[in-house]
Image 1 (cartoon, each protein chain N blue to C red):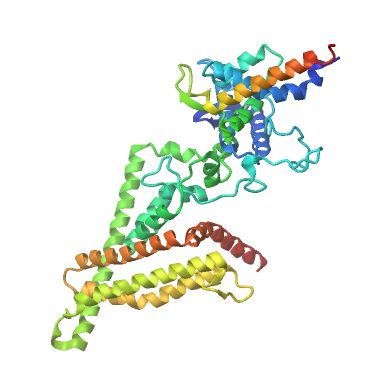
Image 2 (image 1 turned 180 degrees about the horizontal axis):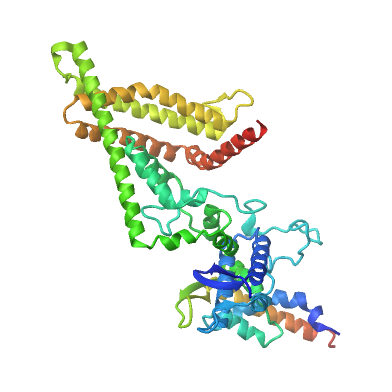
Length: 392
Length: 108
């Protein structure tokens, strides 16, 4: 009696004996290793998985649904070892690329991007996208479920349109992954069969089996909705209480004038403009920081990493813009038709920022480049914090 | 003398040329290619073929399209691009030239 392991190959489930699974795992691992420098790595690996799946399918029938170990071995023998890059000089020495015997420098034309595996970059990914692939790209970059990213943007949009604004900026600035090289750079090393195998082994797909259960899903939905409702109600309540406070204060200071100041209608757009301009200055500062590692030409103090400076900059912006935000909010709530005012105001603010960012992108190529460095920066920050935590 | 071993490098180098010829004749998928090659000295395996096809596609010599199959999931069918056809023509010319040279040398 042998233990059987279920794997997912090219979208279909196959059952393998445990030893056969180990053999396959090893084969795919070595294939992934050998293709490390190949720009078509993701594609070749999926071709190979599909070919193996084809061969497995031919072995199975309605009476036989497990692939035996010796069958796995013969399928792998049939596949043959993966050649790193056929047509390239045949010198699989451990030193890898370098000087060929003739002293001719070997250069893979498609691999001049740099040594080692393709570095991960932020791209928009259109396959399976809802709008323009922004969330998809971010999800691929951080290797998480795009649904969470989308949810994050939606939640952020409730915070004075921030999510929407960020989304639009990313959609404009970040290029779409078109070529296979870009696609593989967008998601880093692709998930290979052994990932599926590992996840299956860890019971990753167990939870999915329960999800199609209608009652459980309905239950989950209901719970989620109830929580959202509660959250929204408490938010509204809080806002109303704030407004009441503002109104009272207003009465105390302005006595008979009533809750609405006549000049308010003119002041609000002005405040929005000021706030928008401030945001743009902040973005410019961030761009200059990310791009030149200096703030508008002012060098950072030694030993201060760029990401820390970016965080400080962000906080400074938050502190400086807080009074403006507060003032604007007073207006919405002091003014009777607050949802309308809110919309008009938010639109002005977003329009100012979008137009200025767009201009910046068009006239300063640096801006575009700087936004590209953000992901790498975030990663470095995470890394720095991690090493700091370890040293503690 | 073991020609098999002696000409391994030569066969390997010629494989790309043969793929161009096979694909020029008809739209094919990988199993077709393997079958056609299996009866010749150039018999090879998927492990060699997929990276080579990917490289050729990257160089713009060929392209593929997905086609449904009756028995299983869709398959990649390869076909030559105009650039691939040009390349094949040039290669054929060069090959004829080499053959000429091999025959001519030493005959006097």
